[in-house]
Structures are given as structure tokens and as C-alpha cells.
Image (cartoon, rainbow, N blue to C red):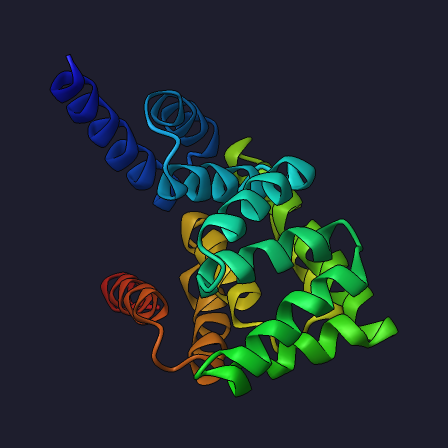
Length: 217
């Protein structure tokens, strides 16, 4: 029986991870919830917390990330996720404490200094959260096939974080869905300038360039 449950839990977890990557958060939530009932492992708790974070259920996500932190106190990804859940609740001091822990304790500490600076700056942190909220609203609009609304929301998010490459990439992706390939091109090019190592961005650029070439635009 244990072997069967272990196999089922593994399948649920792997399926949940695939769904999470595809941004199918509600389905991922169901998979990870079932997996967690079978095995209350830190991995299942973390992935369920990550799904809740994506669903904007920040209080529940924080609870799970804190449980994982007690069990795996040095796990950087979990601490980053905990910090994000706290930022989105505007628990500024708690979020700053998470990032301070990473800055001081991680071999890659300097990489976390920028987000710590945001958490400690009254103006920057509010812009950060507002931008994240608008990005989440845009994702919902895309799922509902309200693409023009999604682009409007992303442009609003861009006003708060003009150098955020994810926002630029998302605008390009929606324009590509609308077959507005020449309009999408400058957005994806700017995103790549800001994050040149991002393969997802690079692949999107290739798709857009092929469509432009094919259409003779």
C-alpha cells in the first residue's frame, strides 16, 4: 500500500509542477493538495505554497513557507518566496528581515541586495507591489481572453517598474497572440536587453521574427 501511495504522490507532484510551469494554477493547486495529504514533505509544502502565491492567496502561502523554513532554514528559494508573500501583504519589516538574512547568510548575498533595498524604501516597495498586482490582474485577463485589457494593465504596471523585463516580455507575448508581430518586436527586444540570458525571451523573439519574415512585415 505504501508503495502505491508513494507512486501516486510522485505522479501528483510531477503533474503539479508541469501545471505550475504552464500557469494553470488551480489545477496545480489540486495536485499539490492531494500530494500533501499523502506526504507532508517540505517539497510538497513548498510547491503548494508557490501555487498559493501564484493564486494571490498570500496569507496561506506565507504559512506554508514558514513551515518549510522551520524544516529547511537555509533553503534560499523558500526564503525568497516567503519574502515575496510578505511583500505582497505589505509586511515590509518581515520581508526586509528575509532579504537581510539572504544578504548576510548566502554565498550569493549581493544578488539579494536590490530586493532588500526595495523592501526598505517606502516609495520603491509600494511601486513593486502595485506592479505585481497589476501583472497578476493582466494574467487573469489573458485567461479570460481579454487581451486588450491585459495590455492596458501591463502598461500601467510598466509605469511603476519601467525596467522590468517580464512586463515587457508579457506585452510582447500578448501582441504576438493578437498577431501584431511588428508591434511586439520592440518590446521583446527591450526585454532581452534587460535580461539577455533569459532563454524564454530569446525563444519568443525567434517566434516573432519568423512571423514577421513569413508575413513580409
